[in-house]
Image (cartoon, rainbow, N blue to C red; front, side):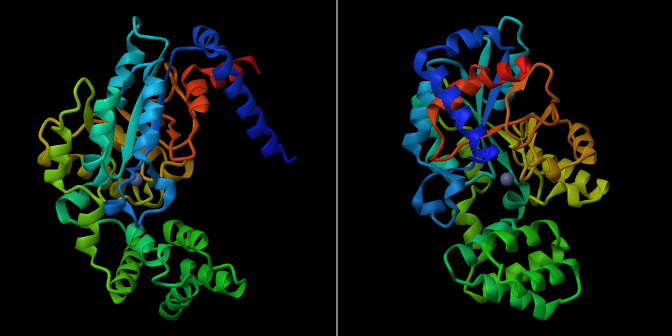
Length: 357
Ligand SMILES: [Zn+2]
């Protein structure tokens, strides 16, 4: 068994032990106070998000059962609410927050019902160009093209090379083709990290349109527009609550941009949201993609300068009182997420291990 598999196995055994024996209650008292922030994208609604990859979606029934079971143990808040609870010396030992990235339409059509049924709060992180210009980022046009086989990976890479065989991306695509390794994952990686953004956006858009894609229509189908966001923020969710948060203007990998361009993406995105939703643009921000290499110290400085109180990554972990407020970890959820793992995380089961070793 490889080291990675062994580690995964031990994590599973520990989480199941804590959950099934009730030992999570003891761990909860011993572990430092904590906030577990869950991160999702779409609540599955085939009419609006059927084109998106499965790892971005969670069935409403599954989300509801996770939130109901967690909610029986810990309060489930918005991200700002979770941070306030963590900072309150009289607060509970553990708190959970839910977050959904990118402002998908199902956050209005399917999410509020789940929140109302479970008394859970949620923060929805919004990409502002979707709201101001009705334009989604290149990634969704790319999913539309390749995810349903409307375009082939080989043809996509070959066509890029015909246009450009000398840039870093051009050379990488040639290499992928020569090794027969031009699959969706590898192509996406080149597009994300090794391209000039304007060139990439124009190329993807042109192939998308050549296959009959309608950019404005796709954006409208999968994302909320500003009226939809207003409606979502005003939804009747009973004792629960929904708040907005910032997620840049165009969902670019921030670490690939200059400090000035990052300030435009982050600060400009916040101004857009403030104009659209005065007083309700949210206090927290989520880095697009969110891995450690997707943002840098300039991103953190721009988030702070824009007036956000905290920023979230997609690096796994649990927030404690000594976490870096501008690089908070989250725990990704989808249909494969298991309750025992969330309970073990929320109880601080893994924080305790880290402290003892
Ligand atoms: Zn995102």
